[in-house]
Amino acid sequence: MATDARLATGHADAIAQAGLVHAGELRPVDLVLDAINRIERLDPLLNALVVTDFDRALDTARRVDPALPFAGVPVLVKDLCTEVAGLPMREGSAFLRGVVSAYDQEYVARLRRVGFVILGKTSTPEFGMAPTVEPQDALPTANPWDTTVTPGGSSGGSAAAVASGMVPVAHGNDVGGSLRIPASCCGIFGLKPTRGRNPLGPRYGDVFAGMAAEHVLTRSVRDSAALLDVTAGPAPGDPYCAPHHPGSWLDELLGPPERLRIAVSRCPAEGYPVHVDCLTVLDDTVDLLTDLGHTVVERELTELTPDVGSAIGRMYGAAVDWVVRYWARETGRLPEPDELEPLTRLYWERGREVSGGELLMALTTAQAFSRALAAAYDAPGGFDVWLSPTLAEPPPRLGQMAATADDPTRAEARSAAFVAFPLVTANLTGRPAMSVPLGWSSDSLPVGMNFMGQPGAEGTLLRLAAQLEAARAWGELWPPVSARCADHRHPLTDPADLTS
Image (cartoon, rainbow, N blue to C red; front, side):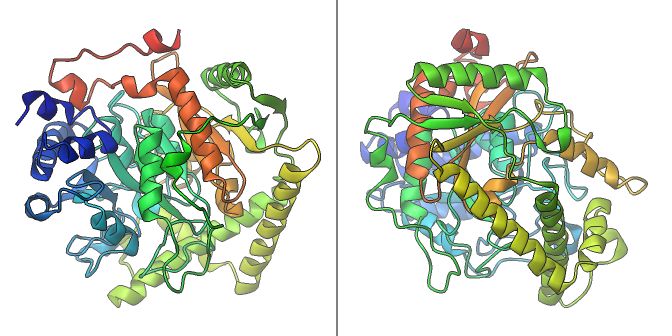
């Protein structure tokens, strides 16, 4: 067994790790053993995982066919909506204590079929309703670039695990930015696919009126494309079906990127301020895109009116009411007063006030917005992609977005200022969108840029991301808390070395 290959596993993406197995340099079980070692060393500093499954993972790795595309490659699954047979399903809530999944979600089954080995589940805020991972029922998850700040949410546990190199890829999902927010905070790549691209069943056919999307957080663009290749496609009975995609997204990265017309927005919703560092990275991104041959035009999201914002609020309130009702039905009881966090209880109370007719009217407004946005993209002189900062500021300190019993709205207000750019528009309209790590704050924290494409056009976004990846080489940067820095063989790369 090559010692150099063993050392490389913590620094390699999923495709490279699988390549070590296919070349006979490592066994699938070696990949899993190395990942377990990294998790045991790094997770006490980050609190990214809520449950581990190491014994079963090792047993699986010893039996997996080494010829499978991702034989033995370790992966983590976000503990929200996604079933892993035999593992707890907590969703960050004390209300779900004792719930254990009896089966694999179809998405998880597809990961297993191509050789991925699941090592555990990652932490999430209660029911995913916050852009940080600070559930009261578990320790807060820290950002590997600075353990005093948030990794973002709600897929922040998965993002911290990938950014630190515990695993090369980790599952996440996105209802209003929950893949892209932590990707920006942790300096990695996060793609939200087109509505219906990946299945949600068998527990769910639909989550939050078509707003939810499953995929992964990755260090490399090619891993994101390759994962989409092996998981995409409808399951029987799915209520939505994404436009058919012939061929392979991974193979598309081999072709030259087209020249795109890209609209750029600098103004967030409701007049929130934007941190100067985010605007600086946006300006640098515009310059880079122009240098790469793309056309960039200034265009604000005027279609997002206050009426649309109000509709989103009613939809989210009703969604939390649905979550609580759903689990009350599954568990046979309502939550006790101390089993829901203050912010969740506030959202639940609001949601119970939304009538069926009001919810349908909110959906009507959201669908009208989707048509207006489509008209803007497709109009003469329109555009292919919409660009904005992913977030209105760099990652804030842990604790700032945590609710208290005395003031549950404190977390709501602080979160709204943080996630001021309307990432949810991609979820409302079913469009693919991605956060790309393209810069740094003055405090050396990652800053991502959000790109929203046309329905079904993940290929366009992935090719653009690969072009940007070649120009910025973010995969060569490692945070202080990471597999690369912990072994003291490779010093931390200064972000200024690659961005100056």
